[in-house]
Image 1 (tube, rainbow, N blue to C red):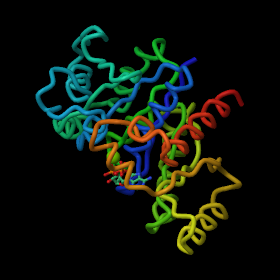
Image 2: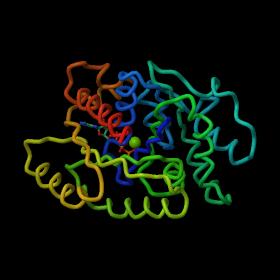
Image 3: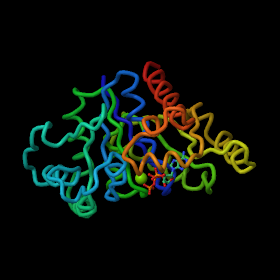
Image 4: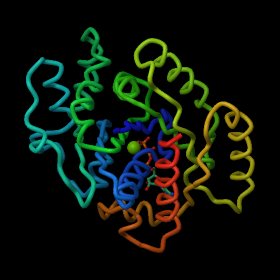
Length: 262
Ligand SMILES: Nc1ncnc2c1ncn2[C@@H]1O[C@H](COP(=O)(O)OP(=O)(O)OP(=O)(O)O)[C@@H](O)[C@H]1O
Ligand SMILES: [Mg+2]
């Protein structure tokens, strides 16, 4: 049974992309088949997998979505899924912003991305989707495809602001577009446990959400190694086996697998 996990938060820079990059690798380390999907026109996830010029690729989420919009048959999967290490990837490009605009004009278009992923479900145990920092059409399409949404929160910023809007949007999507969507949980990223700010914000998140939603026990520590690994096109675990952030993403992968059995 494949699970589609969409990583979303309209707040920018909370480690959505870094989480998809690292969690996809960690889940493959546990012997599962993973497809990572870049659904952000910024194509940061694609870059984090070491692809330098995605705008020159023949097949990306942008070209595939354009075909879906035009009711044109998709190419064979082998042509558009790229294997990078043990993870499979569908890259993105800047052209996805054109798709974003076109999706707004098409009736029923919220389901097109879901249809694309459904055709790939049988090949994977997990499909992880990276989204852009907005609650616009692309993110709504991604959430319409989701079995679960994982919400990274950076406790160094004004973290709780915007979470209510996000949860409201997810509930609206559950009612109108995708009854199967579940809250996978909140993931605290970029944690510096020594600071008062971390203590304050993490207890605020706990107080506001613990009763209604899982808050992952795994928390990702702040370290420059995540950014360095991203720059090298590697997961942090491959970049530096001993890095605590890599270990934390391994723990998160174990939690995700255990929770899948619940
Ligand atoms: N655990 C961490 N420790 C330190 N820096 C981190 C950590 N995780 C991510 N970063 C850095 O924070 C920045 C934002 O991360 P990332 O791009 O993953 O966030 P995002 O939510 O995907 O951003 P956007 O909203 O723009 O898509 C990047 O420079 C990344 O290298
Ligand atoms: Mg991102």
